[in-house]
Length: 224
Ligand SMILES: O=c1ccn([C@@H]2O[C@H](COP(=O)(O)O)[C@@H](O)[C@H]2O)c(=O)[nH]1
Image 1 (cartoon, rainbow, N blue to C red):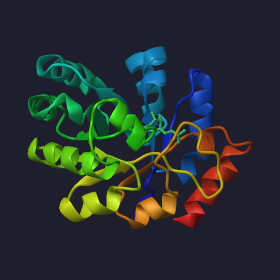
Image 2: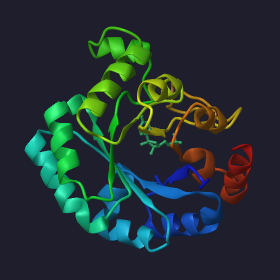
Image 3: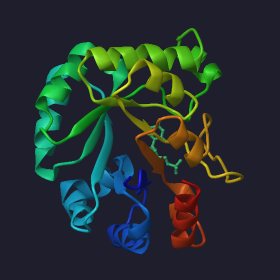
């Protein structure tokens, strides 16, 4: 089985980002580039990281009207990402159009509820119910919209996997035992998420901010 760990490369300098990937590359399965990286380096930066030879997950969490999101997906064909994200709360038409506009080798997955939020945060945005209920509802919508899978926390992935047998599940908010959670609220260990059905494990700061990123990546790999 290939390594499910995608390193979240939330590093502003391109040279530092490339050096980090070179260092840990034998112990990860892919690289996740998000807003911080893309706003600083755009498609040029994505190409530079892609040249290092690992699959690219472009996590831009697109959320706009269907026509705009479809246009953005088309513009991003040039970087041929293996995985891309849109927000499930953008609705069915937006997700359908995003999938139709994506490159044929790109999996499109929908962010359900950010792992930095808990039930109280949900309530404050006017949504009633538990995170579990909210994620299950948005997962069903993403599936009905023809997407490949969703992004959810490790606390929901087991239930989602039962409901959507062949779905592709991306799980961030992962912390090896005892590591600082920072801004993440719905957290599990990488091993727990993998055992519960995650297809991709997104891990950033536990590797990128470790005193020794290579050792941190090796230790995580050894738990899987
Ligand atoms: O719900 C979500 C969706 C995306 N993310 C992204 O994953 C990484 C997590 O980084 P850590 O340093 O391991 O916390 C980050 O790039 C987020 O943008 C998420 O955390 N939660």
